[in-house]
Amino acid sequence: MAEIDKLFKRLDMLLDRIEKIIPGQTEQRTEAGYSAYRWSAQGMDGISLFDRVNRAELLHLERQQNLLFRNTSQFLDDKPANNALLWGARGTGKSSLIKAQLAEFQDRGLCIVEIPKFATGELFEIIRTLANDGRKFIVYLDDLSFEANDDSYKALKACLEGSLQPQPENVIIYATSNRRHLMPESMQDNLDSRMVDGQLHPSDSIEEKISLSDRFGLWLSFHPFTQDQYLAVVDQALRARDMEMNEEARIEAIRFATQRGSRSGRIAVQFAAYWESLQ
Image (tube, rainbow, N blue to C red):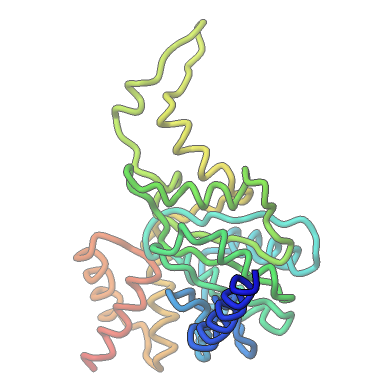
């Protein structure tokens, strides 16, 4: 027995030395002093100079603005608020509207964490980290979509609803996507649907795809701009660069959008930069 006791003591001493050389796993924490973060393989990276978007710069989005700003304000006031899905045409202000939340509510303690697509499967760990922080966080998922063979969407579904672990009261999820249901839809999905007692029953594939977007309580749709709306944003972007919207600029702005097959706020800002470079 004495020999065994000596052996255990030597093992304890050896383990103590190993722990000094190889420290145990540390828990991820948000770094204080920032309001904007990006999740990386190393954890939360603070962003000192984030893209500030003034809500006054977002033209022709009055309905979407009012709904999302009210939802965020309720979240900060500990009132009922919904996770939000902003979907629709590219370049129409979805991402800008989410960025504007931070510029508007930073003084009230709001923080935002941008989660890249590759980290969607880590949402449970990310949200657990944020739950240990006393501040209010928007989890920002930009340009979100999933392919048919991508299972990472299941982590998002569980975080939104369906998990035994509830969503913390200090975390809300805002996502943008060009797809309303976040996943590709095929003709075969419709062909697999069937009629039962005179009622249409969608296929299992359709039910699976719709069930993901249905877990967002607030849907905001974004549509392509009319020509007049597009030109109004061009005018604003030119004035921000101390330039005027004359007839020549108007004609070139229309031609610029036609070449790209789209009229949007993004195209308008790109044209303003292009037009300034010609002056």
